[in-house]
Image (tube, rainbow, N blue to C red; front, side, top):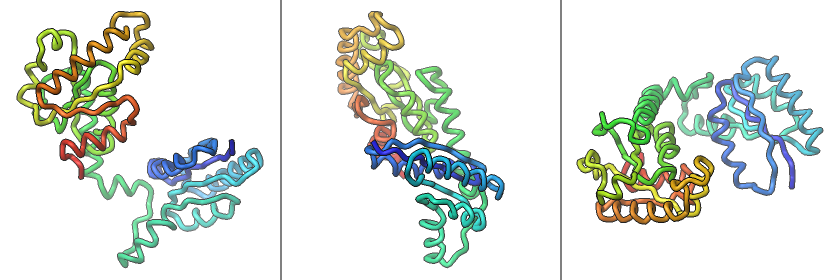
Length: 268
């Protein structure tokens, strides 16, 4: 397999450069070694980055890939003296857009937070809400939820809720369906007045068995028979309540979040 080192170099946290790194997923035939160099905001740090790029090229036998978000033109130009393949946020996206809009772009570190500060604060507020309403921790404030995820234990509710909050500012609560709900044959009473906000997750029994077995090996909770029974019962509860659900077995949290936002009309 082809081996390449990819550098994420930024004058800030490097979050934006990391997001651009999703491009690498289109090339599964290459083994990428990732090196992150945030807060590269002086010429001395640029020189250190250049040394690291040179060393990586010698070790790999090929040019490193450099994904960079450097607003300072001097730092950018100096870094580009290195022998690497550069994906430059400013050169590729920001500068052409500047010409189109006939406006000078802001170039300092942390622009995303300073320009979209209210949205950033909204995300942080959503994260706090989501963490406080994880796994049915509290019923208080459910009326503030944008979406409530339900499903059997360990089907992916928590990571999906957190992703919705962090990426989109969605206040996502999640509720596990438990044996008491199955015996009663209905959703928890506290959820009845929030049916319009509820979205369900399900999962294949074999996958649920594997996940639960890692946590409580050999237990009835993790047994394949119990997993099958809980999933069938949970899906029946959701079907009877008219709740839409998605299968999390082979879907990433990104895919699940997109489905949830589309189905609950939370997409921006």
